[in-house]
Length: 476
Image (cartoon, rainbow, N blue to C red; front, side):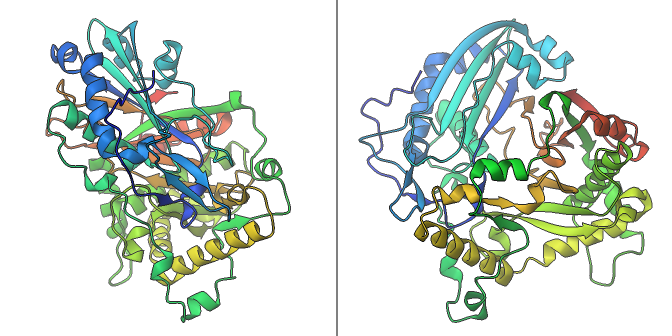
């Protein structure tokens, strides 16, 4: 059912330009489950009536979740809200005969939830010339047999990335408890005004026609042809998605080993995310080559980089401009476990190489190229850009470290989620979420969403370097 806002619709909201950063390249809905253990407070604090009322309150403070995509005459896109034509989110409720204990025994497997209709059909997230009725937010609450609940939610990633979605769910929970009085800064419509930071008299602007290596564009092919060109022809039945866990203690030990290896030069350092990216990249690339899914050779390794920090923009707010910080790794770097320190250093150096000047130039190039496609009459120019590293026909492996998003903060009054679960359909692109909170309410593990072709997944499971620190939590 659509949320009935009645006379509580906000009067206005700030529009967000979509085509002034890389967000328009993520045209999909990102789903996630949050699971709640049995509690006597679920009946009172998470009742349908109370959740609907509190969601209405939360939406009033975040009207962009009531918005639509608008394609303007110059084919730029904005995410706008009009109270005369709101795009109301959906909220559904159901009960199931599935118990919390059964869910837990199966590792809270996403497919188990699907079999019990606890999810919603994931719509096409593509931006269209004429906006349809697809809500920006869809929620389904399932009450488990014998106690407990599961909250399924998804938002359109073009407008609301993972951080924004989970920040909103946490804010909704605050409203449900009567504490939602001020919208968190994560949900403030901060403008990603990257282009306004570019000095128009600098060499950056003069060289704006230079294409960044990480981003590709092709106006000579139809979007469907581009999709075929950059997608490895693999049956969906052969793709195996799994969730693995690594403790923060084991990751810290790996980082210490890198620091003690002698590989780092004076003044150099690596982050835990750099080390984790190196470990994942080694093991995933090695598994693909050992299984003969990809032929032997060098790999492109990347770590997703939030551009706001190097550009000096606010670090929190709706959406985030992303670039995939690439580096090259020889077959030797990925085949030999003792080369982990060298690969971690290479990942760190690649991240540091993305200077504000380079990133501004990349965004200026995107802006100029996008405008050029629009002037040339290219239909839906946003469908002609892609990140080169996400071409699954290439030997590429990468990591998106999202271990700081507030995935476990949504306490509706019956306790925080004890587990969260999503899925990642893209092979060789590993997404990292925080694991469930420990006894101190601080996560002590990371969950890695890994999808590989079946032979490669079998090889990964047989890799002692992987299994020594990574534990299978659940299959899809």
